[in-house]
Length: 256
Image (tube, rainbow, N blue to C red; front, side, top):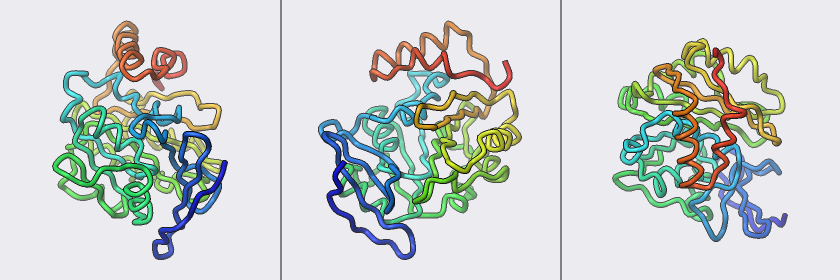
């Protein structure tokens, strides 16, 4: 891996830089930890396995209703999730990011399109932004991936935070959250999410090899049949090439 350049200081927030390895560009916040990635020749595809799993809500959401639905990302990273929702799924997208350097990097290095009628990047503290009435009940897919430069634990991981996340969701909406972290306690985080959403609303993946554990929480709990989930997984695999049919081996409801 070869570092190319670093810039974009933002007040006292971490500097933003990137590195490249063959055909992949990686985003960093001044450390070796990868905060996102992009295929240089396919900038709107998804390279990292855990990021693909952040779209597990597609297993539950009616395929015909995805286009035009509202996706919100807390934490922009390299813009991967936002770009995919916007370009590939044709959703209305809102991304909330604290660091202006990250926004600048995404627009300059990671092919994030400019704001328009379907895309809005909000420069704000996510813990404050999600308390605004304008977002309540409007989000169909909430994807939470909030880490600092050390990637030690989720920046926002309280019961109150997850309760606010639930209030953002539409009746059929889902939240997916990345619980990767060297010092974070998966069990404690899962307990907080279950307390906010209800244990019957929680589904969870086994961790990836890199240690990313993706948890999904539904606003309205449901238990699709195995056949229905298999059909949805097959459709995801056929359309995007992701190993979604294998997800069902490592993705289970908290309460069966």
